[in-house]
Length: 296
Image (cartoon, rainbow, N blue to C red; front, side, top):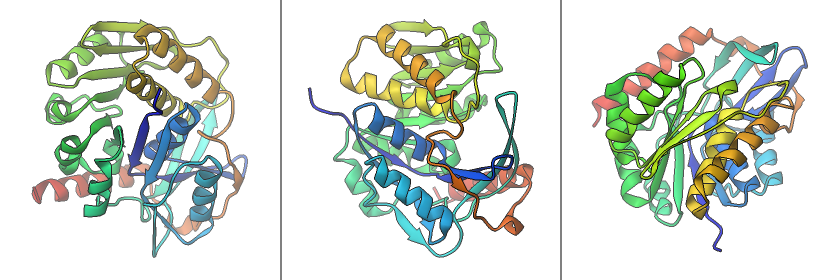
C-alpha cells in the first residue's frame, strides 16, 4: 500500500515548561506533521522560525523525526513561544509571543500542495482565506479547536475532508449535535475529541465513537493533535473506522504520559521580555484573522 503523504502548513511554537526549565517543540501543525510521520506517512512541514535557539530546536527536532522541511522558512525576528505551567496534568498558559509563526502560503506552497494526499492546517494558523485554494488542490484537514460559532464552522466545512473540533467541555449530546452540524455544512469527516470522554467521528457511513484510554496523564499537551494525525492517516489508508478510532485513542493516551507534545526538550532559551498575556495573544490573532478576511 502506498504511504499517504501529508503536508502540514502553519503554526509552530516552543512550549516552555516553567517548572522544568525546558522548552519543547509544538504547535498544532508541527505536531500533526511529526505524528503523521510516526504513524507511517510521508510528512512535510511548512511554516516559519527565526534564527534563534528556539528555531534551532524546532529544525533539529523535525530533522530527527524525518519530517521534510524544504518549505520551512527562516525569518528575521523571534520564534514563537508559550510559557506553560502544568497542574494535575492539565496545561495552564501563562503568556506567549507569536514571533514569526503566522505566515501566508506562497505560490510555491500552493503549488506543492497538489502533490500530496492531504494538507493539514488549523484555525490558529490564520489561513482561513486560503482554505478554498487548498481544497482545490488536495484534501484539507482543518482543526477548528474550540470554535462553536456555527457561521465559522459553516464557512470552513465545505472545504474539509476532515474537520476537527475540540469538545472536552461538551456533553455527549452536544458533541454529537455539533458534529452533525459540521457534517451537514459539508465536511466529509468530522472528528470531535472529548478528552477523557473519548471521541466521535462522523462521516458518510454514520457516526462512530471510542472511549479514551484509562490513564493517569502526566501532560495532555498534544493529545488532540495526536488524535487528528492518527485519524487522518487512517482515513487516507482506508482503514476500518472503528479500528482507526481505537488506535487514535491509544496513541493520544500515550502522548499524555510524557512532557511536551513530541518530546525533544532542552533548556529554555527565549526572550521573556517579549511575553504577552494570553488574552492579548488571542486578541492579536483575531485582528490578524479579520484583516486577512477583509482582503478576500
